Length: 444
Image 1 (cartoon, rainbow, N blue to C red):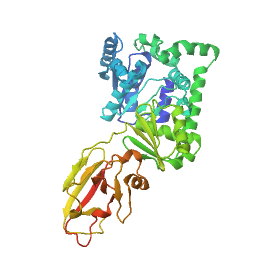
Image 2 (image 1 turned 60 degrees about the horizontal axis):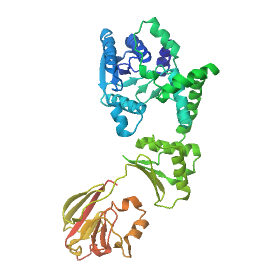
Image 3 (image 1 turned 135 degrees about the vertical axis):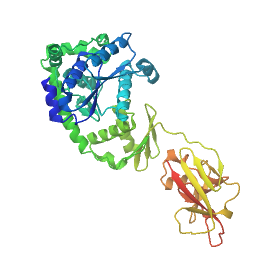
Image 4 (image 1 turned 60 degrees about the vertical axis):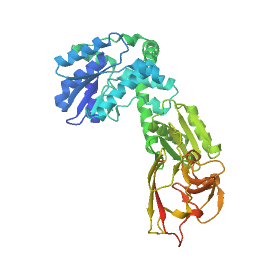
């Protein structure tokens, strides 16, 4: 396949010595790709591994695995097979069969890459697949990023046949006497891609000559434009953590194309982009313009968006904050979802140190760490008594974090706001003999 050779050479798809996995289904496309790479592995200086995932979706899937296994044995190709229950996954996660099979398959591939078993995974997508992908994405309401279709290289995944026609693959398979099996499920028009391939595309090809190549050309133009916009997108000030992203409100003055991509980037980072639609993006932009501080927006897939002072905060799987009361004593206490509070008793008093330091005698024996409560009052260091709620607002503590922040209190009188301040009532002075030094390891 001349097209494949050029693509590999012009894009440096392989590095010398790499272990390359080939995703094989037994169909003509993946078998032709496996044959081509096996014939050229010495020239490319790569090690080849055939990878087959049995989705357990058809009765004859086991025989298909044996077919590929036998071919690899005859041609001295390493072979790894994996079995996943795509139907159970679909039911558990409310996915279509198509989505579940893809999720399970890529889960296997990702694991092989992460464990260093293979360096890259080769996929057998070609021109027809790309044309179908572009149309499917457009039918689903995708923008420019969807219009560019599949990428030749994405992370550790490569598609050497992406610009190879089906006819070229068929001719290659025939010329090299490559065996393959016909997947009967490809005729099942319940799947969206099959419906497009078997019903819609034949009619388009009859009416519009060269439609597949034109769609692929369009995808290349879309990729060029999309890559340019992404490259000028400034995301340096976006704060990212495991399940949270914070975007400066000031970023929302950029052009719409930048803002939309910025939000998409955040949802993709959190791994929740699947259920986020254009209407959700628009609601977030309206939130920035009109919503008051502290407002919360619930999106699908347990995603919450908060407006928090100078930031828009997006959280996947937002935590519920709850903890039991604990007394103040020397040692370290762990408060779930907040972090650690370490208390050390000292007789060497240094009022200038930066850690919280309180007079032992001024702290009542019945003082406890607890969550904030309605009616709590706080006399901050330096004087001035106000409601704890107002104090936290003044400190610009986001509303969602206020319940997670422990306070040391007696009744409604707050003596310490963990990680923030101590009360005037417990500060050390010239008469202090013993003090508690408090340090924090905060996970909020």
